[in-house]
Length: 565
Picture 1 (cartoon, rainbow, N blue to C red):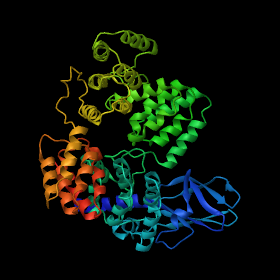
Picture 2 (tube, one colour):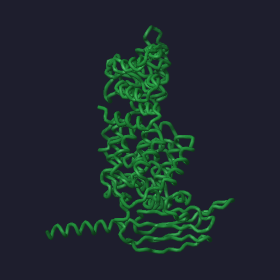
Picture 3 (cartoon, rainbow, N blue to C red):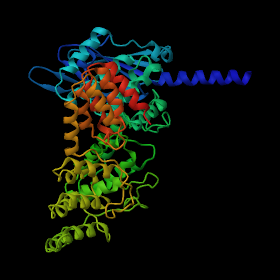
Picture 4 (tube, rainbow, N blue to C red):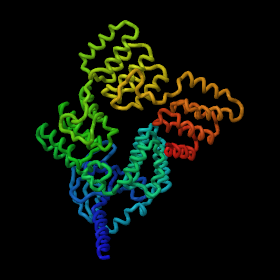
């Protein structure tokens, strides 16, 4: 019993210590010109905090800061100019919040307040969600954005604002205003900090259409910790957390203090190689941009990949590298990346590194193939180049070879043969777009989706188990047959038969043309569910949700898709 009491007391003390290390800084901006501040290099806009339920129109609240030295700069905005004030330092003590008052003339006053009962009052149960009035204003603001990217930015700003809290229902409305699986996943992760009813958060998983994305979000939620700002990862062991702004600014300042390029390269390489460090793509970009010389940039880009928490954005780093050869080099490294093998400054050893054919060798090859004049000789020579030897090709090189033959079935065979040796598969859509027939584009897309690394194309027999969407000709016949149905229920019956036919497969675009041929939403829902088995591009299936005007039907279909096996 005594041991149990000691254990409970230790847990309470540990929670108390964690709570008192999560310091809140309140910045009050007085005067008409003080509109924003930089804290540890991060921008905080007063306008982002004026539509909250706090009622304090001139206060910026920054929670979960850590003890130690920090910096603040006041930015004054007048009608004619924007001026950045001198950087000032301030210290945070464990157990004390800090109020910073910025006067109209730009001077700063600091007041400490002891933290009391932080652990209890910061729990989700004691958070107040945004009022209905403020939330409706926010929703209207987002709706007025014309593009998906601007809506994404607006919702992300609202969810990232530490003064904002939301119910699960409010979050559902906000996230659904943005399209794109990756965008929604990122917003849902950002939103978890602000949810006031986390027990209901799993209901938001249905906003994601793929099981992989739902698993990703579940892993994030499972590993989530309000103390995840640590760069060591110890507070959030199941999920990678990017280096905090404060620590990142310290790192960049240390690197700037190095006097030569070689020392800077070593310092950045060491930061990327440190197993306790993780970075966003934007942070990695900013570090690499401190270096000159393409070889150095390629070297650091490869070293950084281990530590990136948002690899879906990593292609943004390619743009830093001046030549296409350098960008191809990094892209090839990423494709063959082995997380179990540390980057050693050469190539990720233990993997096969692909180098596309040199311009000289490629020009010789294409000239030889052009000289082939017997029927089928060009096709045979191109497939031979793709399937023998140690040849690798960029998408652009492969497309030039494929276009030597005008016959679309021949081009399809050559395109499939090429995929195993492409060094930049992210650009392979350029080859898919060579085909004028949608049926051939769908056939090649399905081949790519079902491709198994290590296999080689052999006269069309490899990867032959994938499903091909109905050809344009057959689809046009089907849709006309359905349109001619005039008896009650005739269209519904014809479409149900089409979707239940085990020999039929459709693209999302085809299904989206067929389902609206019936007007009743309940019937549309049944057809949408029946169609899911037949869809060859399920990553696009969320487009079907647009058919429905009722959110209830969209939710029903999303639940069906999520549970589909």
